[in-house]
Image (tube, rainbow over all chains, first blue to last red; front, side, top):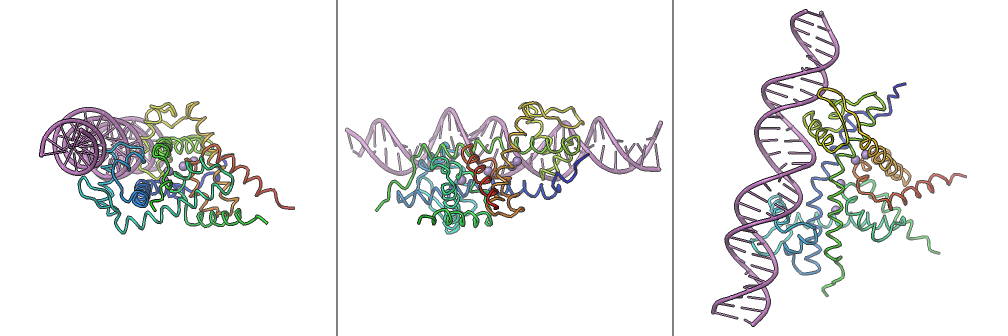
Length: 148
Length: 148
DNA sequence: GTATAAACTAAGCCTTGGCTAAATTATAAG
DNA sequence: CTTATAATTTAGCCAAGGCTTAGTTTATAC
Ligand SMILES: [Mn+2]
Ligand SMILES: [Mn+2]
Ligand SMILES: [Mn+2]
Ligand SMILES: [Mn+2]
């Protein structure tokens, strides 16, 4: 017995969990810059009160997170003023939104409801590699063409 | 201009982020019980040293996490002895493995490479709702049948 | 223009989940 | 049976990301 071979190599398995942990580290940053970018587009500015309410956290929590983002060079703001994205922040926002949209559209295209696609894509987006993203794009194309 | 309507309702958006945060809370638990179950199947027992090396963390980190899992009723173990799953832990392991396998098989079935499917599914699995899972299963079935 | 309300910051607390270094226990070798 | 090695625990540190409560600043209303 002792079906060895069922388990992957330890260091490979470890590498995968490490990669997931890495993704989680950048997750808050991606969600925040994406939201800030949206707020600026639609409202002309991003206020803490809106960031907090849309992220589903209290204002002090949003404030502290934004301090981290500022420390790491993604946003800029002066006390009691609204929040701006740095170039680095804008770049990440653009990249994140694109990836998020692809995951969302992909879920729709395979038959997931709008509501569920909206919900699931918010978490999935951070764990989809470039390779998988490419496949997603292909599937979106294929599922939208066939309408003769 | 001012394309209002572009932003979802604040409370709905907040609910989505809250849901992702909820998923992250159970993520460690799911990955640990699934791994422990695998180790018991293949090696006959689950030792801390193996859990740690396969999770990609140090032994003290694994030890502390397992103490939490024990506190929450998912595992049992006596000092310096190997780790056992409670009924609750076994149930969660089974459920988690099933979901993980579906996500993995789904990625394969749409054309993602074995290596990438292995990596991406480790993170994605925790953010896939029941509805999406159902769609995944359907796609797996459809993509495996057509071979006449 | 001043009073009230809203937005924001400050301070302090908590849990999770990482780490290292040192002590303890169990196992293996000789 | 004793000793060396391996496994595990303990203690203590840290950062992220949550929270509440209280103070400060800005904006609004009158
Ligand atoms: Mn997200
Ligand atoms: Mn995640
Ligand atoms: Mn899993
Ligand atoms: Mn996982």
